[in-house]
Length: 262
Ligand code: NAD
Image 1 (cartoon, rainbow, N blue to C red):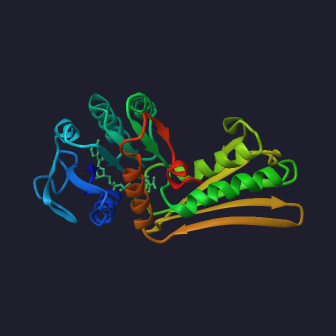
Image 2 (cartoon, helix red, strand yellow):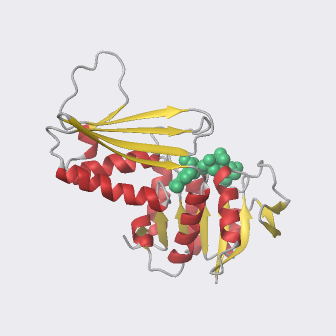
């Protein structure tokens, strides 16, 4: 049984992870940590009533074997630094990461196993493989690839990490350098669409958990690969599965395809 630290219990995902972890025999929730100013610090953790929510990251890391992080770029960087000091395994789902967070994750992955995924759902990880296959089969010169994503109005980063992962899967299938062909939204006189471009648009509204469609517009036909998440539980279950899988692995960076054996 691995001792699990869950970050951000006052958040949508942190709460969902605690709920999902509560029923997993391979994991024991050893600590729950949030920002000092967050609601619920000092009180019993949701779905883990015998654990009190704390704010001392270093102390919690000292007693954990693996942690799950759905917080913010700053939260991810701070947690990865604290984990590196103790070689604690990590499952990181935070999106919209900055350079400091990426550097902290890279440093952690040199001393501990780290699963990083923009989306922990089984369906989305299958979609990544399907999008890459479609991109391999459909010539970029004839087939325009565009991605549309929709999320709830609280979401801060755009495009979503999942939309970027799909876009990169398409670029990989076409053997393109993603940064050379990406087009994140369009505004003004942008001219005709160049062949080979990969477009991404982000819609925000209401309580949408997460929807992604990869479009392939061909001559006289069109393919759409869509995924709709209706509950955060799918991400939480995947993250908990990753936590049980990653504890005890060799140091390095892993993704959800490794966890699922795809
Ligand atoms: P949220 O705002 O509801 O919750 C964020 C939580 O993190 C809160 O508890 C907050 O107190 C805590 N936090 C923020 N900054 C912190 C810091 N510096 N130190 C410690 N704790 C900190 O957000 P959410 O909807 O739960 O999403 C969190 C992240 O997870 C986002 O980046 C989101 O895009 C991502 N996400 C990823 C997946 C996936 O499958 N990879 C799925 C859903 C959401």
